[in-house]
Length: 258
Image 1 (cartoon, rainbow, N blue to C red):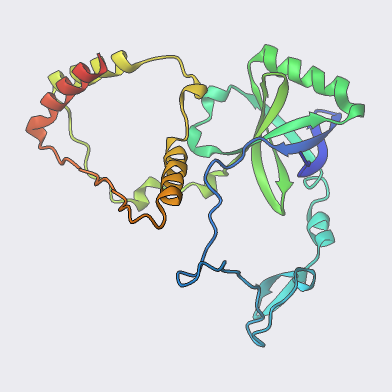
Image 2 (image 1 turned 60 degrees about the horizontal axis):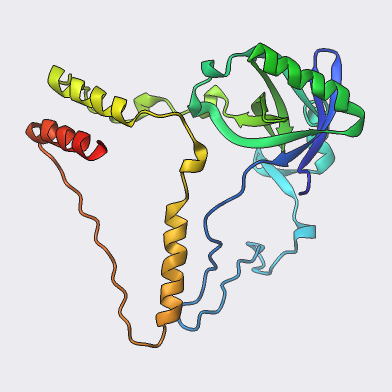
């Protein structure tokens, strides 16, 4: 696995040299875009809007439009903007993870200590474990500043990138219907259903069944190709229940769960 970032964790006056690795991978199928006529692959080109000619990656630069003209930025310009943030994960506070709402979480990454930082890394890991807190800080990844938390996971420190407050859309942008008050009997039944379905969280109990079914469908289409077999596609039936049917639906759910 290749490191996607190298730098250090800033823990007080201690700098811990680390490498950053992606902790997640996609589970969906890698589908190609094809021409419907002959199933040839579709390719996308980076084209100059004036000449219409394709441009190679080595000739592409990044620019920001300022007062009608583009200001081109090189890699060293991004580092000059904040050399510390581009190379240091600066921890500025420690909080309980339960205080952070899930809406702020983005992507998980593994932090691995460089050889020279193993002792300091182990110290931070132990301190986070014993305090039952996570470190909150910020750093720059791919020319974007990220809020992040550092927390122990199994035998490693995991970094989760997070959204800044200004990146969260306000609820008042939505047209939310007025909240109705449930009937006592309905609430009691709903609470009973929650109690019946309550369990300890086990991530291994959840599988990407959609991708598995899609693979199954692909195999079926591959084996039936040219045999004249017609594929059957199930129809989703949506039930729009009236308010009077809510209690009966809850009762049926409880019966099914038991």
